[in-house]
Figure 1 (cartoon, rainbow, N blue to C red):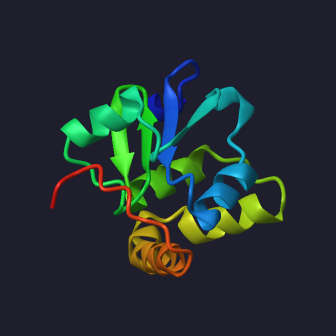
Figure 2 (cartoon, rainbow, N blue to C red):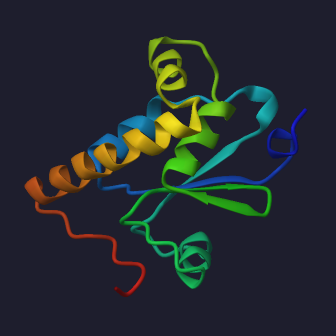
Length: 134
């Protein structure tokens, strides 16, 4: 078993709780049972995880963040890693695996996903997370 998927590792996903796309993704995505429990954290709420990411300079408006053990992944890297931890059961999870199992493909598609998210949030009148100063 790879180090990143060893059981009992801390798994946390910090995502935008006000983004309908993000909420649906985390609701539908399933990780393999042997990987462990994934803690979902709303990036718009103050939390220890958000503080840690902000201190590291990780901009949550540019993508969600996934912690596996002591290491954080951000944006396309986080999506790719989360996909590898996922099950292959159900149409949604199989589609996610086909799209994002390749780190290169994920890196190419992620800017489009981020642009869709940002456009959707603007249409809904939602403010950016702004956890880091630009």
